[in-house]
Image 1 (cartoon, rainbow, N blue to C red):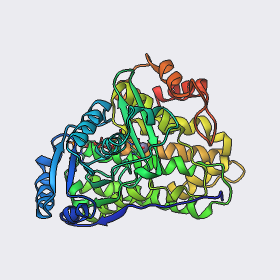
Image 2: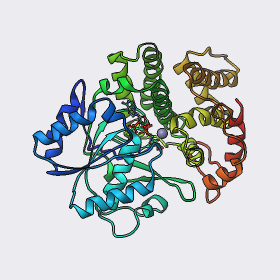
Image 3: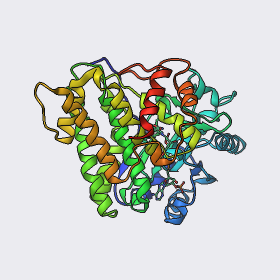
Length: 389
Ligand code: NZQ
Ligand code: ZN
């Protein structure tokens, strides 16, 4: 196990009706918020009214900025920064999914910075001051509700970049599984794919003696698979929605990766796809991961065989570990296919036109990933494997 330091300051308020607490939680920090949200979902399904009521009950002044798009855009971040500065707003309240939360985090960082907030997404620079961010989560997926990351897209140049900083973890996250009942099947699945991917990025590691966290991640995978089938059959099953929501937060708040060396190559490749084609992050990941696994499995056949046996109950072919390893990749791909996720670029009608450009943007200025270091040529090979699977 590697040395590590872990601290997660996010207060988690979980359960039926938890969103009613948003006013009280927010009041601990401020009397004035910028309420940030996405498209119409929170208004359509009544969450907006509940949040406003709870904030008003605590006499909190509310400014609003809706319109966050999936793959959140830098232009709206600039707009949010201006609203906060013009009105002396000192708290960001994100109500929505990863895109809304990431946009709120970017605004929170940008308000206190004299330069261009994009600097943090394109260099090693770290912010010195921030506004606190609170969250009411509506989709289990990105894990941004307690993560240290924010991912923003700059449309000019089709750039999608991450800023990682321990100080941008939200101060509270409110999770009511009932809020996820309204998710369309496709969004439920995109979220599940992202949650799975956050486990895979941590599972495939070169760190030795990480048995406990191996088991934690494997347990998350098994529970996620089981509950995916339940919600596909019964979208209003509270227990299954609750399990998925809790896994989505825990698998990406850092604790499952402690003592390990995480990979993140597949995420970086996926970000290049969604930067150009604006597909859902989760859909890109269910395409890239099987291809990445196929490309790197020989690096540690035992680990891949362990994944196959422990997560998917594959048979152990003693003396032929490679066969077991490949079975795991096949079963993961079959799981994605069976539930209705795409597993190839063809499945989402992405042509081969930009594969070279994506590889260059991804690894042209340095290798990516840690399990296996990938250069531009490797990334291109993975993208080619992903064309048709
Ligand atoms: O915009 P609205 O109308 O709210 O609709 C959203 C959106 O269209 C809809 N939705 C959300 N909750 C709903 C709902 N529809 C009905 N009922 C509900 N309860 O779902 C759509 C997707 O929302 P979005 O916020 O984009 O989803 P997600 O949480 O998957 O976030 C994706 C973004 O997070 C980034 C991704 O790259 C992507 O930009 N990530 C952020 C990370 C982080 N900050 O730690 C890590 C991840 O790896 C990821 O990169
Ligand atoms: Zn992700």
